[in-house]
Image 1 (cartoon, rainbow, N blue to C red):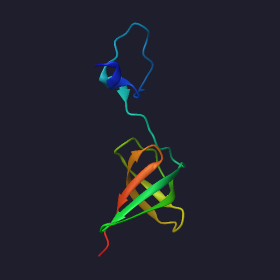
Image 2: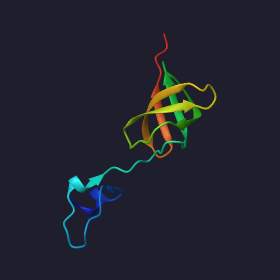
Image 3: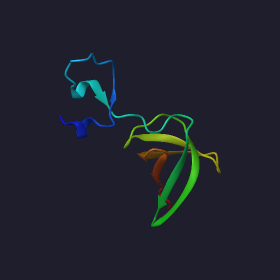
Length: 93
């Protein structure tokens, strides 16, 4: 385990000084928090758009969460891709 690998990780519980750090003590930090205003990147059939929404749950990078679209009020599921950004692929027939 190198410093670069653990940089940005969050600890699950307190680690006492002098004790070794193991992967079981670390977790990815939540980069979207419930209630955050996020940018929704919406993709569908070669079309893309963006909108503002409110995160309905916490999320780490790569996690699927629910977001309420501020314009339509609809709940959409998307993937957290970075802090404050959630991407969703809509299926349009």
